[in-house]
Length: 417
Image (cartoon, rainbow, N blue to C red; front, side, top):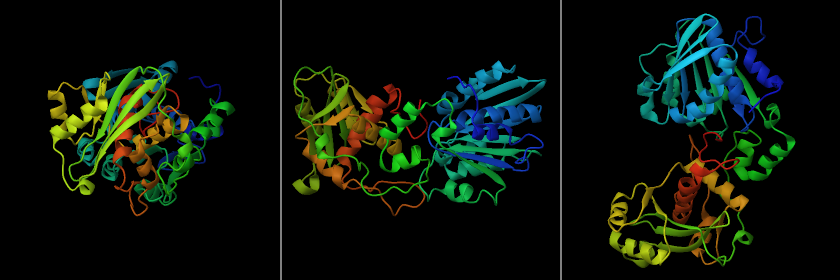
Protein backbone atom coordinates (compact mmCIF):
# COMPACT_ATOMS: atom_id res chain seq x y z
CA UNK A 1 0.00 0.00 0.00
CA UNK A 2 1.43 3.40 -0.96
CA UNK A 3 0.87 6.70 0.81
CA UNK A 4 1.03 9.98 -1.04
CA UNK A 5 0.87 12.04 2.15
CA UNK A 6 0.28 11.60 5.86
CA UNK A 7 -2.84 12.96 7.50
CA UNK A 8 -2.51 15.63 10.23
CA UNK A 9 -3.11 13.03 12.94
CA UNK A 10 -0.48 10.71 11.49
CA UNK A 11 1.97 13.59 11.35
CA UNK A 12 1.37 14.22 15.05
CA UNK A 13 2.25 10.58 15.78
CA UNK A 14 5.38 10.84 13.66
CA UNK A 15 6.68 14.00 15.36
CA UNK A 16 5.47 14.09 18.98
CA UNK A 17 8.88 12.96 20.30
CA UNK A 18 10.92 15.50 18.32
CA UNK A 19 12.55 18.21 20.52
CA UNK A 20 10.62 21.43 20.28
CA UNK A 21 7.31 19.68 19.51
CA UNK A 22 4.36 20.81 21.64
CA UNK A 23 3.95 17.20 22.87
CA UNK A 24 7.65 16.53 23.50
CA UNK A 25 7.26 16.36 27.29
CA UNK A 26 4.79 13.48 27.09
CA UNK A 27 6.09 10.11 28.28
CA UNK A 28 3.61 7.89 26.43
CA UNK A 29 1.27 7.86 23.45
CA UNK A 30 -1.99 5.99 22.84
CA UNK A 31 -3.52 5.70 19.38
CA UNK A 32 -6.98 4.11 19.42
CA UNK A 33 -10.00 4.18 17.15
CA UNK A 34 -11.50 2.74 13.99
CA UNK A 35 -10.04 -0.11 11.97
CA UNK A 36 -8.07 0.85 8.86
CA UNK A 37 -7.60 4.36 10.19
CA UNK A 38 -3.83 4.52 9.56
CA UNK A 39 -2.73 4.44 13.18
CA UNK A 40 -0.59 1.28 12.99
CA UNK A 41 1.62 2.46 10.16
CA UNK A 42 2.24 5.88 11.71
CA UNK A 43 2.80 4.40 15.17
CA UNK A 44 5.21 1.69 14.05
CA UNK A 45 7.23 3.97 11.78
CA UNK A 46 7.44 6.68 14.44
CA UNK A 47 8.50 4.20 17.13
CA UNK A 48 11.42 2.86 15.11
CA UNK A 49 12.53 6.31 13.93
CA UNK A 50 12.43 7.62 17.51
CA UNK A 51 14.42 4.65 18.80
CA UNK A 52 17.05 4.88 16.05
CA UNK A 53 17.36 8.67 16.29
CA UNK A 54 17.54 9.00 20.07
CA UNK A 55 19.42 5.87 21.16
CA UNK A 56 22.40 3.71 20.26
CA UNK A 57 23.20 0.27 21.64
CA UNK A 58 19.85 -0.08 23.46
CA UNK A 59 17.14 -2.71 23.66
CA UNK A 60 13.47 -2.15 22.86
CA UNK A 61 10.34 -4.26 23.15
CA UNK A 62 7.84 -4.76 20.34
CA UNK A 63 4.75 -6.58 21.58
CA UNK A 64 1.60 -7.95 19.96
CA UNK A 65 -1.03 -10.46 20.91
CA UNK A 66 0.99 -13.11 19.09
CA UNK A 67 4.42 -12.99 17.47
CA UNK A 68 2.97 -14.07 14.12
CA UNK A 69 0.37 -11.28 14.12
CA UNK A 70 3.06 -8.77 15.09
CA UNK A 71 5.29 -9.83 12.21
CA UNK A 72 2.37 -9.70 9.81
CA UNK A 73 0.76 -6.44 10.90
CA UNK A 74 3.75 -4.36 12.02
CA UNK A 75 7.20 -5.63 11.09
CA UNK A 76 6.35 -6.60 7.51
CA UNK A 77 4.98 -3.09 6.96
CA UNK A 78 7.57 -1.03 8.85
CA UNK A 79 10.93 -2.68 8.20
CA UNK A 80 10.81 -2.33 4.39
CA UNK A 81 9.92 1.35 4.80
CA UNK A 82 12.89 1.82 7.15
CA UNK A 83 15.10 0.19 4.54
CA UNK A 84 13.76 2.69 2.02
CA UNK A 85 14.96 5.47 4.31
CA UNK A 86 18.46 4.04 4.45
CA UNK A 87 18.26 1.66 7.43
CA UNK A 88 19.52 -1.92 7.42
CA UNK A 89 18.13 -4.73 9.54
CA UNK A 90 18.47 -8.41 10.20
CA UNK A 91 16.24 -10.79 12.09
CA UNK A 92 17.08 -13.82 14.21
CA UNK A 93 13.79 -15.65 14.25
CA UNK A 94 14.92 -18.26 16.76
CA UNK A 95 15.63 -15.46 19.24
CA UNK A 96 12.70 -13.24 18.17
CA UNK A 97 15.21 -10.44 17.71
CA UNK A 98 15.49 -7.72 15.06
CA UNK A 99 18.68 -5.63 14.91
CA UNK A 100 18.40 -2.28 13.10
CA UNK A 101 21.20 0.07 12.01
CA UNK A 102 20.35 3.62 10.94
CA UNK A 103 22.48 6.75 10.65
CA UNK A 104 25.33 5.17 12.62
CA UNK A 105 23.16 3.85 15.47
CA UNK A 106 22.44 0.18 16.10
CA UNK A 107 19.67 -1.07 18.42
CA UNK A 108 18.02 -4.38 19.23
CA UNK A 109 14.25 -4.94 19.12
CA UNK A 110 12.90 -7.98 20.97
CA UNK A 111 9.55 -9.41 19.82
CA UNK A 112 7.01 -10.69 22.35
CA UNK A 113 3.52 -12.17 22.23
CA UNK A 114 1.16 -11.16 25.03
CA UNK A 115 -1.54 -13.74 24.50
CA UNK A 116 -2.46 -14.67 28.10
CA UNK A 117 -1.55 -14.16 31.75
CA UNK A 118 1.43 -16.52 31.54
CA UNK A 119 3.05 -14.25 28.93
CA UNK A 120 4.14 -11.77 31.62
CA UNK A 121 6.93 -14.12 32.68
CA UNK A 122 8.48 -13.97 29.19
CA UNK A 123 9.35 -10.31 29.50
CA UNK A 124 10.75 -10.28 33.04
CA UNK A 125 14.37 -9.41 33.69
CA UNK A 126 15.12 -7.36 30.57
CA UNK A 127 15.67 -3.58 30.45
CA UNK A 128 14.18 -1.52 27.63
CA UNK A 129 14.56 2.05 26.42
CA UNK A 130 11.00 1.88 25.11
CA UNK A 131 8.22 -0.51 24.23
CA UNK A 132 5.58 -0.63 21.50
CA UNK A 133 2.40 -2.55 22.37
CA UNK A 134 0.36 -3.18 19.25
CA UNK A 135 -3.29 -4.23 19.79
CA UNK A 136 -2.81 -3.64 23.49
CA UNK A 137 -6.52 -4.10 24.28
CA UNK A 138 -6.11 -7.79 23.38
CA UNK A 139 -3.36 -8.32 25.95
CA UNK A 140 -3.76 -9.16 29.65
CA UNK A 141 -3.08 -6.38 32.11
CA UNK A 142 -0.28 -8.30 33.81
CA UNK A 143 1.70 -8.53 30.57
CA UNK A 144 1.27 -4.84 29.74
CA UNK A 145 2.26 -3.76 33.24
CA UNK A 146 5.35 -5.96 33.12
CA UNK A 147 6.33 -4.53 29.72
CA UNK A 148 5.95 -0.97 31.00
CA UNK A 149 7.98 -1.78 34.11
CA UNK A 150 10.90 -2.88 31.91
CA UNK A 151 11.34 0.68 30.53
CA UNK A 152 13.77 2.18 33.05
CA UNK A 153 16.30 3.81 30.70
CA UNK A 154 16.43 7.61 30.86
CA UNK A 155 14.29 9.08 28.10
CA UNK A 156 12.26 5.90 27.62
CA UNK A 157 8.70 6.19 26.30
CA UNK A 158 5.64 3.94 26.05
CA UNK A 159 3.72 3.43 22.80
CA UNK A 160 0.21 1.91 22.72
CA UNK A 161 -2.00 1.11 19.74
CA UNK A 162 -5.42 -0.60 19.65
CA UNK A 163 -8.97 -0.83 18.35
CA UNK A 164 -11.69 -0.18 20.98
CA UNK A 165 -13.28 -2.79 23.21
CA UNK A 166 -15.94 -2.20 25.87
CA UNK A 167 -16.05 0.78 28.27
CA UNK A 168 -15.25 -1.50 31.22
CA UNK A 169 -12.01 -2.73 29.68
CA UNK A 170 -9.05 -2.20 32.00
CA UNK A 171 -6.99 -0.37 29.34
CA UNK A 172 -9.79 2.12 28.66
CA UNK A 173 -10.13 2.83 32.37
CA UNK A 174 -6.40 2.93 33.18
CA UNK A 175 -4.97 4.66 30.11
CA UNK A 176 -7.65 6.27 27.93
CA UNK A 177 -9.57 7.94 30.76
CA UNK A 178 -6.39 8.61 32.76
CA UNK A 179 -4.22 9.83 29.88
CA UNK A 180 -3.57 13.28 31.32
CA UNK A 181 -2.69 11.94 34.77
CA UNK A 182 -0.23 9.52 33.16
CA UNK A 183 1.32 12.29 31.02
CA UNK A 184 0.15 10.38 27.96
CA UNK A 185 -0.80 11.80 24.55
CA UNK A 186 -4.05 10.17 23.42
CA UNK A 187 -4.97 10.40 19.72
CA UNK A 188 -8.34 9.05 18.56
CA UNK A 189 -8.31 7.88 14.93
CA UNK A 190 -11.17 7.60 12.45
CA UNK A 191 -11.10 6.21 8.91
CA UNK A 192 -10.90 9.77 7.61
CA UNK A 193 -7.41 9.94 9.17
CA UNK A 194 -6.16 7.32 6.69
CA UNK A 195 -5.42 9.09 3.36
CA UNK A 196 -5.20 5.77 1.51
CA UNK A 197 -8.91 4.95 1.98
CA UNK A 198 -11.28 6.22 -0.68
CA UNK A 199 -14.84 7.30 0.10
CA UNK A 200 -16.10 4.14 -1.59
CA UNK A 201 -14.01 1.92 0.66
CA UNK A 202 -15.12 3.80 3.78
CA UNK A 203 -18.73 3.39 2.67
CA UNK A 204 -18.15 -0.36 2.30
CA UNK A 205 -16.98 -0.59 5.90
CA UNK A 206 -20.07 1.36 6.95
CA UNK A 207 -22.24 -1.30 5.32
CA UNK A 208 -20.21 -4.24 6.56
CA UNK A 209 -20.55 -3.79 10.31
CA UNK A 210 -23.62 -3.50 12.51
CA UNK A 211 -24.46 -3.06 16.18
CA UNK A 212 -21.60 -2.92 18.64
CA UNK A 213 -19.02 -3.80 15.98
CA UNK A 214 -20.07 -0.81 13.88
CA UNK A 215 -19.69 1.49 16.87
CA UNK A 216 -16.27 0.11 17.72
CA UNK A 217 -14.63 -0.58 14.39
CA UNK A 218 -16.19 2.16 12.22
CA UNK A 219 -16.98 4.90 14.74
CA UNK A 220 -14.02 4.01 16.97
CA UNK A 221 -16.06 4.06 20.19
CA UNK A 222 -15.35 2.10 23.36
CA UNK A 223 -18.95 0.88 23.20
CA UNK A 224 -20.89 -1.42 25.49
CA UNK A 225 -22.27 -4.58 23.95
CA UNK A 226 -26.05 -4.56 24.15
CA UNK A 227 -28.91 -6.94 23.49
CA UNK A 228 -28.77 -9.64 20.84
CA UNK A 229 -25.35 -10.57 19.54
CA UNK A 230 -26.58 -10.90 15.95
CA UNK A 231 -29.02 -8.01 16.17
CA UNK A 232 -29.17 -7.56 12.39
CA UNK A 233 -30.39 -11.13 11.72
CA UNK A 234 -33.99 -11.65 10.64
CA UNK A 235 -36.05 -14.50 9.22
CA UNK A 236 -35.89 -12.89 5.77
CA UNK A 237 -32.25 -14.03 5.71
CA UNK A 238 -33.27 -17.70 6.03
CA UNK A 239 -33.32 -19.42 2.62
CA UNK A 240 -34.51 -22.77 1.28
CA UNK A 241 -31.84 -25.37 0.57
CA UNK A 242 -30.63 -24.62 -2.96
CA UNK A 243 -31.00 -27.20 -5.68
CA UNK A 244 -28.06 -28.49 -7.65
CA UNK A 245 -24.70 -29.94 -6.70
CA UNK A 246 -22.51 -28.73 -3.84
CA UNK A 247 -18.77 -28.33 -4.22
CA UNK A 248 -17.69 -29.13 -0.66
CA UNK A 249 -19.17 -30.35 2.61
CA UNK A 250 -18.22 -29.77 6.25
CA UNK A 251 -19.78 -30.60 9.60
CA UNK A 252 -19.30 -28.39 12.66
CA UNK A 253 -19.85 -29.69 16.19
CA UNK A 254 -20.33 -28.22 19.64
CA UNK A 255 -20.08 -31.14 22.04
CA UNK A 256 -21.82 -31.53 25.38
CA UNK A 257 -22.63 -34.29 27.82
CA UNK A 258 -24.99 -32.56 30.23
CA UNK A 259 -25.19 -29.50 27.97
CA UNK A 260 -26.69 -29.87 24.48
CA UNK A 261 -24.69 -31.14 21.52
CA UNK A 262 -25.21 -29.40 18.20
CA UNK A 263 -23.98 -30.32 14.72
CA UNK A 264 -24.41 -28.39 11.50
CA UNK A 265 -24.01 -29.68 7.94
CA UNK A 266 -22.49 -27.05 5.63
CA UNK A 267 -22.42 -27.17 1.84
CA UNK A 268 -20.60 -24.83 -0.56
CA UNK A 269 -22.36 -23.70 -3.72
CA UNK A 270 -21.28 -20.79 -5.94
CA UNK A 271 -19.17 -19.15 -3.23
CA UNK A 272 -21.85 -19.39 -0.51
CA UNK A 273 -21.82 -21.79 2.43
CA UNK A 274 -25.31 -23.10 3.31
CA UNK A 275 -26.19 -24.68 6.66
CA UNK A 276 -28.51 -27.21 5.09
CA UNK A 277 -29.23 -29.55 7.99
CA UNK A 278 -28.64 -29.94 11.71
CA UNK A 279 -28.58 -32.35 14.64
CA UNK A 280 -29.37 -31.11 18.15
CA UNK A 281 -29.61 -33.17 21.33
CA UNK A 282 -30.37 -31.77 24.80
CA UNK A 283 -29.91 -34.39 27.53
CA UNK A 284 -31.94 -32.34 30.00
CA UNK A 285 -34.93 -32.38 27.67
CA UNK A 286 -34.51 -36.01 26.65
CA UNK A 287 -33.76 -37.13 30.25
CA UNK A 288 -30.81 -39.24 29.15
CA UNK A 289 -27.25 -38.78 27.96
CA UNK A 290 -25.73 -40.01 24.73
CA UNK A 291 -22.32 -41.66 24.48
CA UNK A 292 -19.53 -40.60 22.15
CA UNK A 293 -20.31 -43.58 19.96
CA UNK A 294 -23.96 -42.54 19.72
CA UNK A 295 -22.95 -39.01 18.78
CA UNK A 296 -20.63 -40.42 16.12
CA UNK A 297 -23.57 -42.43 14.73
CA UNK A 298 -25.65 -39.24 14.66
CA UNK A 299 -22.90 -37.44 12.78
CA UNK A 300 -22.70 -40.22 10.22
CA UNK A 301 -26.46 -40.03 9.72
CA UNK A 302 -26.24 -36.24 9.31
CA UNK A 303 -23.54 -36.66 6.67
CA UNK A 304 -25.38 -39.35 4.76
CA UNK A 305 -23.55 -40.31 1.59
CA UNK A 306 -22.02 -36.86 1.14
CA UNK A 307 -18.19 -36.63 0.86
CA UNK A 308 -17.30 -34.67 4.02
CA UNK A 309 -14.07 -32.65 3.67
CA UNK A 310 -13.70 -32.15 7.41
CA UNK A 311 -15.41 -32.24 10.79
CA UNK A 312 -14.81 -29.14 12.92
CA UNK A 313 -15.10 -30.04 16.60
CA UNK A 314 -15.23 -28.15 19.88
CA UNK A 315 -11.56 -28.15 21.00
CA UNK A 316 -12.49 -29.41 24.48
CA UNK A 317 -14.12 -32.60 23.13
CA UNK A 318 -10.97 -34.75 23.09
CA UNK A 319 -12.70 -38.11 23.58
CA UNK A 320 -15.28 -37.44 20.87
CA UNK A 321 -12.59 -36.36 18.41
CA UNK A 322 -10.71 -39.58 19.07
CA UNK A 323 -13.82 -41.66 18.34
CA UNK A 324 -14.34 -39.80 15.07
CA UNK A 325 -10.71 -40.27 14.02
CA UNK A 326 -10.92 -43.99 14.66
CA UNK A 327 -13.94 -44.10 12.37
CA UNK A 328 -11.98 -42.43 9.61
CA UNK A 329 -13.30 -38.88 9.76
CA UNK A 330 -10.97 -35.98 8.98
CA UNK A 331 -11.20 -34.05 12.26
CA UNK A 332 -10.09 -30.45 12.84
CA UNK A 333 -9.91 -28.79 16.23
CA UNK A 334 -12.01 -25.62 16.07
CA UNK A 335 -10.62 -22.10 16.35
CA UNK A 336 -12.17 -20.83 19.58
CA UNK A 337 -11.47 -17.10 19.92
CA UNK A 338 -14.98 -16.01 20.92
CA UNK A 339 -15.13 -12.28 20.12
CA UNK A 340 -13.18 -12.46 16.88
CA UNK A 341 -15.20 -15.53 15.87
CA UNK A 342 -18.47 -13.71 16.54
CA UNK A 343 -17.34 -10.75 14.48
CA UNK A 344 -16.27 -12.97 11.61
CA UNK A 345 -19.55 -14.90 11.73
CA UNK A 346 -21.52 -11.64 11.76
CA UNK A 347 -19.59 -10.40 8.73
CA UNK A 348 -20.36 -13.56 6.75
CA UNK A 349 -24.03 -13.68 7.77
CA UNK A 350 -24.53 -10.03 6.88
CA UNK A 351 -22.78 -10.29 3.51
CA UNK A 352 -24.56 -13.55 2.63
CA UNK A 353 -21.44 -15.69 2.44
CA UNK A 354 -22.97 -18.07 4.97
CA UNK A 355 -26.71 -18.78 4.94
CA UNK A 356 -28.93 -20.66 7.37
CA UNK A 357 -31.46 -22.77 5.53
CA UNK A 358 -35.06 -23.57 6.33
CA UNK A 359 -35.42 -26.53 8.66
CA UNK A 360 -32.49 -25.55 10.91
CA UNK A 361 -34.91 -24.64 13.66
CA UNK A 362 -32.63 -25.06 16.66
CA UNK A 363 -30.05 -22.55 15.49
CA UNK A 364 -32.84 -20.11 14.61
CA UNK A 365 -34.31 -20.53 18.10
CA UNK A 366 -30.94 -19.83 19.68
CA UNK A 367 -30.34 -16.82 17.43
CA UNK A 368 -33.02 -14.79 19.21
CA UNK A 369 -31.82 -15.79 22.69
CA UNK A 370 -28.07 -15.29 22.15
CA UNK A 371 -27.28 -12.07 24.02
CA UNK A 372 -24.38 -10.12 25.52
CA UNK A 373 -23.69 -10.52 29.22
CA UNK A 374 -24.00 -6.92 30.37
CA UNK A 375 -22.90 -7.81 33.90
CA UNK A 376 -19.36 -8.78 32.87
CA UNK A 377 -16.81 -6.20 33.96
CA UNK A 378 -13.35 -6.56 32.49
CA UNK A 379 -14.18 -8.08 29.11
CA UNK A 380 -17.11 -8.42 26.76
CA UNK A 381 -18.81 -11.76 27.10
CA UNK A 382 -21.87 -13.47 25.75
CA UNK A 383 -24.16 -15.28 28.14
CA UNK A 384 -23.40 -18.99 28.19
CA UNK A 385 -27.00 -19.84 27.41
CA UNK A 386 -28.67 -20.82 24.14
CA UNK A 387 -25.28 -20.84 22.44
CA UNK A 388 -24.58 -24.40 21.31
CA UNK A 389 -25.65 -24.23 17.66
CA UNK A 390 -24.22 -20.71 17.48
CA UNK A 391 -20.91 -21.91 18.90
CA UNK A 392 -20.56 -24.57 16.22
CA UNK A 393 -21.50 -22.03 13.54
CA UNK A 394 -18.75 -19.78 14.92
CA UNK A 395 -16.33 -22.73 14.88
CA UNK A 396 -17.12 -23.29 11.22
CA UNK A 397 -16.72 -19.63 10.25
CA UNK A 398 -13.44 -19.16 12.12
CA UNK A 399 -11.84 -22.49 11.22
CA UNK A 400 -12.93 -23.12 7.63
CA UNK A 401 -13.45 -19.59 6.34
CA UNK A 402 -11.37 -17.40 8.62
CA UNK A 403 -7.90 -18.43 7.52
CA UNK A 404 -8.84 -18.27 3.84
CA UNK A 405 -10.66 -14.95 3.94
CA UNK A 406 -9.42 -11.87 2.16
CA UNK A 407 -10.70 -8.35 1.91
CA UNK A 408 -13.12 -7.24 4.57
CA UNK A 409 -13.96 -10.34 6.56
CA UNK A 410 -11.20 -11.34 8.96
CA UNK A 411 -10.45 -14.08 11.37
CA UNK A 412 -9.74 -12.26 14.63
CA UNK A 413 -10.23 -8.98 16.66
CA UNK A 414 -6.64 -8.62 16.05
CA UNK A 415 -6.39 -6.68 12.78
CA UNK A 416 -7.40 -7.18 9.19
CA UNK A 417 -5.00 -9.23 7.18
